[in-house]
Image (cartoon, rainbow, N blue to C red; front, side, top):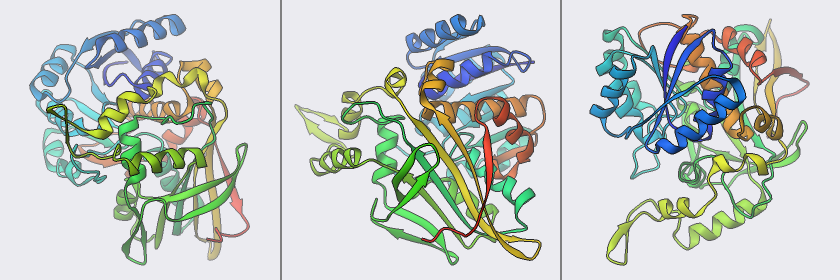
Length: 401
């Protein structure tokens, strides 16, 4: 049993804290901190109502390394679970080093002024975490996170060699709203509008955002158009699985979402550089974020399911083989359990699982780790027991595109 500090009170933080409270044999006590303490208090009230567990709350500006260090020292947790904005990853990592506690996050660091999704800044902490005898686990959500573990599980149990890997992310949920993002609008739009990028033939291949699409029939969702995108797990998978000749990431978007996004881009509301408005600087995308629905408010509105997984093609016992591992998550079931929709659920549950494995010592080590570097078996086992069951399908043929 261990005490844990969770930073971030959005939908993912809410799910993670609810699920931690449902596992009291691992998490002896939970502290939730965020810039807005009322959001923490609302989550704590929900957790108390649903589980009977009391969650402590605190106000914190996670950009302030000294304040974050002081809070960690006061709370005395076994580890910090960072579910705040990716802009704050480095500040929180610094505070963990200063306070001497383990670290876990779900998304890699990203500078505020440029949409750059890469691990280089966090990998640079390898020597410092190693010297301190501390463990930092990066990208412990679903993608990155569970899909990275699916890849490790595929290599350990299903294929002797992986030649191609495709990550397929489908959100078949419908809120009934004309335009809403299912996680932080600022981060979501920065990801979607970034140029596409995938690994093939030993190099990165880049192209315009959302310029390549394919149709795929997702089980329990149906046929959906999915678009080639860049996602951060590609960078770590290329590093730790150099045998893979092609790695791609696909995400589904509806026509209405893309139509609204196109208009917002054309009028400049997705810009991340400052503009002058009535004598003061504003960031258009941050202004747009303030106008859009808060993702954590979408739970009672969302119907449908997510279907996220990996399709790997390679060799097994001398013959060609293709395998598909996926999870299907129901938005309404996720809301009934935690008060949050499935996109938050599929990220928050893996964060809780990763923290549990670190606390119990099933994952241990000194240094900075990506998910695919760790033993996939206990994580895969907990996915089945904690609300995200997965299935393995042997495919007759690899993807035709």
